[in-house]
Length: 258
Image 1 (cartoon, rainbow, N blue to C red):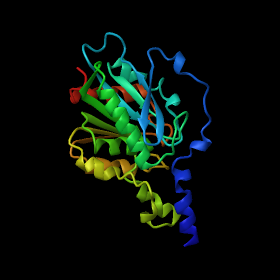
Image 2 (image 1 turned 135 degrees about the vertical axis):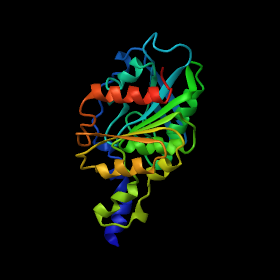
Image 3 (image 1 turned 180 degrees about the vertical axis):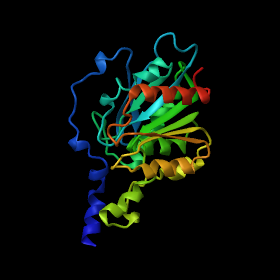
Image 4 (image 1 turned 90 degrees about the horizontal axis):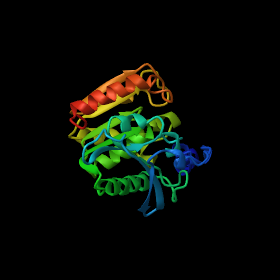
């Protein structure tokens, strides 16, 4: 009982290790076209970065991706890797978690969901964004963030990389009952309810979130596609060129890009 009580109190430090992430040097001023959007939430102001599509790739309001990163990352780490969306004609909104980086508050499923709801509402209110072509994309914990968002706002497609079925599924690793998990992120349930197309990408050799999680999410999806990569957790995708080919094919099939 003492062990379970301690685990209950410390679990958010395990799930959200924000104190262990080295703060990078300011880089937003060096990214062409980047717009900072500060989101008002109950937790305080949360930072987000909007990257525009490459000029000439979109006629009229552009489709957009809302991205959620892993639990040991910051939005600062991702602009270069996600630039492929801009080349495909999509804007990208990178949303920080409360308490991470320069954002106020404390991370939890509730505060993260509130931040992503605020991000969605701010993005779809823009005249240069097509609200009918919003794609939700999450990696690892970020999959939980966008799955939670998918239950509360409409979107054209869902993309999940290295995402778990539920945080409760990891309780047995710590020899604890699953009901002690304070932030369950029930992604399987969200995927079951999602009406649109879902792209699930997962490393076959992932030891942090085993491949079986990706397979289970695929099985739960009504319109899902599973792409296995020969990779682990932190090196997925192993080849960004192949990744962008897979993403472009998925987005074209969903009529999100021409």
